[in-house]
Image (tube, rainbow, N blue to C red; front, side, top):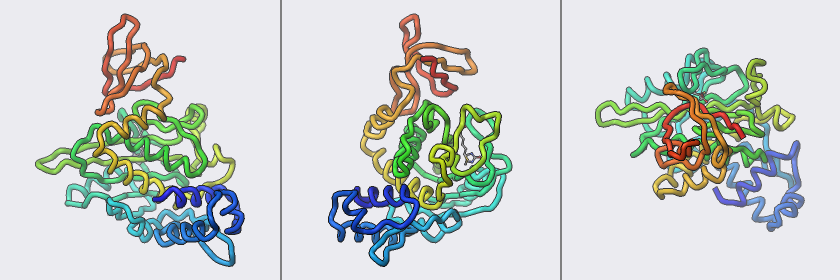
Length: 311
Ligand code: BTN
C-alpha cells in the first residue's frame, strides 16, 4: 500500500462522515486528482471506500463476513482466503484442523464469538461479540520472529486509526498501558510441513469483562465511538503481509519492534514457572526472547513468561 493510500484511509477512518475531495487534498497537501486516484485504488482493493459527487467516504461496514470477498482483492503477496464463522470453540482449532488437511498459507479463520478462546500460558481469552478474533495460517521458513512481527503489524494497523500502540513483551499490544490486543502463535512441525497459527485477539467494540477492566481496553473505549471492524481487519492483513515479507531482511522488523516497545529500558519483573526475576529489560532476540540484566549483573534470557513493568 502506498503512503498516500494509507493517509487517505486514515483520514477517512477518522472522519465521521463524507469529506470533500478538495478538503482532503488540502489536509494532505496533495493534488486532488492524486487523492481521488488513491481512494479509487483503495476501493478497487476491497476497502469500503465510496468516491462520488466530489466527496469521499468510508462506508462504516462492521460485517467481517465481507472480508471473504474483499481480502483476495487486497493485492497482497500472501493470498488471503477468509473463513468467517458466527461462533466456534477457538479459531486456532478450526485453522489447525484445516491446516492438517492441507489448507494453504494465508487461510484466515475469523469468528464473531469464541466459546473457548485461549490466550498464552493456557489462559482463557474472553471473546464476546464485537471483537476481531482471527487466526492466520502461515508456513514460514522460521518461527522465531513471527510473534514479534505480528505485534508490529497490529501496531501499524492501529496507527491508521490514529491510535498509538506500544508493544509489551512478549507480544501484547497496549494503548496507554492497557492491553488492546493479544497474540498467540502456535506451531506445528509434523513431518516436513511446518506451519504456524497466528492468533490475533483484538478488542474492538466488545465489552471488556469487569475483572479485566483496569488492564484491558477496547478500541471503542479508546476512541469514544464504535470502530468499523472490516477496514481494520483488512488493514491488519495488509500489514501482516508487509511485515512477513520484511522478515526476509534480518533485523528490520526487530528494530521496529524495539522502537515500538514499552518494555525495553524498563525495570521489569518476569514471572516464569522457574521463578520470578527482576532486572532491566535490555533487548529482544531474533527468536523473540527477552534479555534481562539481573541485579547481580548477569544477563538472563527469557523465552516465555509474564512481564510486569516495575518502573
Ligand atoms: C494472549 O494471551 O495475549 C493471546 C490471546 C490470543 C487470542 C486470540 S483470539 C483468536 C485466536 N483464537 C484463540 O483461541 N486465541 C487467539
